[in-house]
Length: 301
Image (cartoon, rainbow, N blue to C red; front, side, top):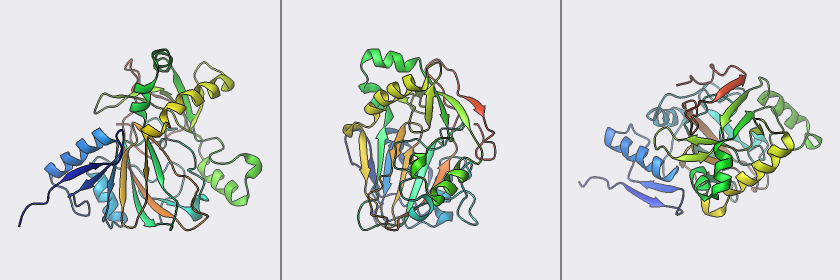
């Protein structure tokens, strides 16, 4: 019997690839794990089809890439699985991730990698968009790059996550109360150096409340400008979900967005994240925690 041939099939030119010939439902040998790591470094987001994983299997796969976080700093996990977060239409109201963000950047050491496993897939819509923030940084004109190089941003979970306050019904208010049950604020460099590849990426997203030293009005205008480079179509891959599919993306150098485009139909994924390092800027300075102790969520490696 011939050995399985491993292959990488690019989805777009700048981000995203499908991995073929790697069985992530079983433990990976060192060669297969190196293959996955190198593919993740190169493509930032990987898709594995035909990968039926329960919570234990998803945790087993993710743990091969590093120590796992708990499910979330404030949001409840899947019952009996403290490291598995439900990402479901009935839990988050569909639109809760309907904006660009990087996972949990409001803590000092956000996750390195995010894995999502499909459980219930709607018949249409419900995709996940993932953007390459290193490509966005490379796209910046030199004057904007110099500006970004010197900026730091305050990230917090205490803000209007998906909808303005006047549109909050009781269910949204309850979810927001859980999400902000403990307030976190952290200062991160706007340009982060990737700990494995050394690439520079724009470390921004929807948890940014303002830039250090600037007003909220000034910050809003600059954030909108820099974010427009992240979300350029050429920097984005659109992952279409199907049953028994796992997606992993590098949370250190991507943003993602889950559009609310599936007419309120059932949609459920489960998320397991790998603990990451404290971000480092181009000058070697590390991110600083302002408010909130996240040691229950992840160690600062």
